[in-house]
Length: 392
Image 1: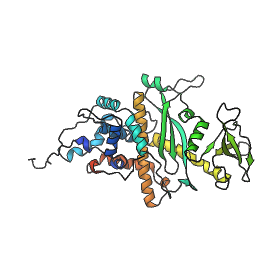
Image 2 (image 1 turned 90 degrees about the vertical axis):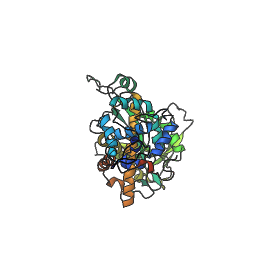
Image 3 (image 1 turned 60 degrees about the vertical axis):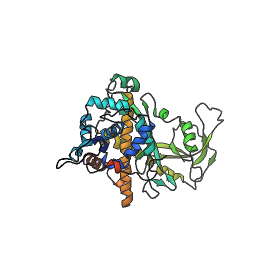
């Protein structure tokens, strides 16, 4: 029998109780277990750091960016030791043990979890998320500094330097992302070496245009002024019908029909000419002036990337992973945590009838961090996701 003040053991390990506070609703342990099985990362023997705990650890280290490995592990288990006696003791693992565990896990479970969880989150009445019947999304790219190790330097490369300038102190990884403008939810991403341009991470423009429009999505993109866009038909709103072709298709054998909107912004002597192309070829469905005014929504992705790199990651963020697979794992950890925070923010804003932009990302980030360190009363084993919440 247990002594006074003790609770009889149920065979549960302390590591089975590790959770991510408010983020556990988005990443329930049963979903993480499914992903681990799908990726073939199920352990053959009991470990101090089983795969599910390592996934939680990667997410936690991207939530508590700037904290050391062992401190992140302490934050994950803070307070749990006081709740009950456990079948097996659990000690804070060393940094070396965590590094080995991350390498065993690899990036694939985080990538699959991203594909399972990260979707557009806006409801039909979410403010700022729609133009008429269209959901607004934007695509753009950025770079992350990574540690100056030989493996990272060889794989990712360094930024080019100007004449007489020294090379960058850090290698960099390039990331392209697709973001829902009204909620800042990232729901698609790709990463690669610095030598891979954003337009390669995102396929060649014509190919991407074909692929994206082939899904049923309508597109509004800015294009260079030197692209040849013949006027096939002029419309009363100032736009005109034209076509684009793939690079090298000089005979224009396989064109794609587009509508062109041209306008200028700026002072009289410093006007900036904008050329937009769209799949919406009927001006009555989307007038040129409205599409020109809508284009500024793409800057929401700049705010999103700033949230990830500056607020979530911290000032002058340098990823901590010493090897390329770890960098990819860490990037998807950052994207997953950000998506979870934005999902929580949208739910709170929608319930209150507010525009998600009215809520503070920084304040939400602080609340999420506090919930992780105050999770002793939370049982992840009883957390249930919404029906079909994570199904493709």
